[in-house]
Length: 333
Image 1 (tube, rainbow, N blue to C red):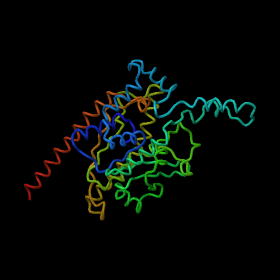
Image 2: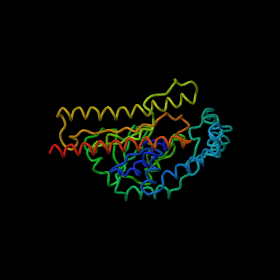
Image 3: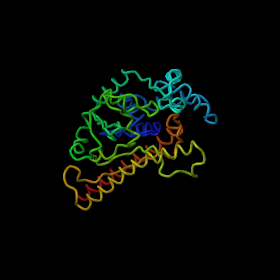
Image 4: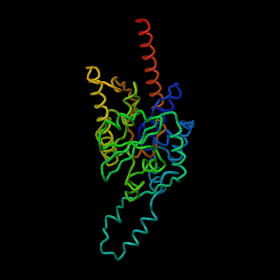
């Protein structure tokens, strides 16, 4: 899971409703919070709808007012505009000859995170005590290194990749400080360090952590983007930002998919041995319709409802096919 939280939450809720419990969950960005709520046993549907109601104060036909409210007041309990720091920076720049105008007018850190330290400490405790494996990521933009963070229940899943993985992906335990980094948006700026490193939300590098799940027989993918663009090409700045976001996220995702497709072909040809010598079944649950760029912040109840019923149908169909295959094997035996 990664991004488009209403879609991801709907998938988790559907899996609960059908009675399927995952052995391991990979999550990035905002879905890290919602997976923690899932593990706490919270009522995900009610929480998401309350969250949406708090953000969408005005009806959908006046969504620009919801956006304006978000820009001027921030996202409740998550971030707020960095007005005071920007004003202080403006005052400090007066009379300084080396001041660059673009740094004042278009600063990098337009937002300020407001989650307390206790939030990350509690979340780390939830993940590290869970019997469900958890994977999440951060990214060092200075050196181009991705860190995949895991709890004890997911240790076996990352063991193979620690021994045989790419040099630009490294593996570390989940800690409160790394959770803070995993939710660090680019809009917060890059001046902050985490245990001495410059780190950001790993979603900017790899939206969906997939290859580390290849030890599983079946992987469900709560894909937060639809397969195609839609009924027309981008016609305005907001739609172009949406398109750019989709291109950015899809590039890493398709790389992950192609890796697994190639792996499955090699398994079928008998060219794979060892712990990954099995095909990986992928069940993709893509969002029905692309949300716009702003929808990643202003969640949508229609997205939640549509994704819930779609997810439930896909999971139930998978269960039925699995039961039929098992029955056929018994008859053959």
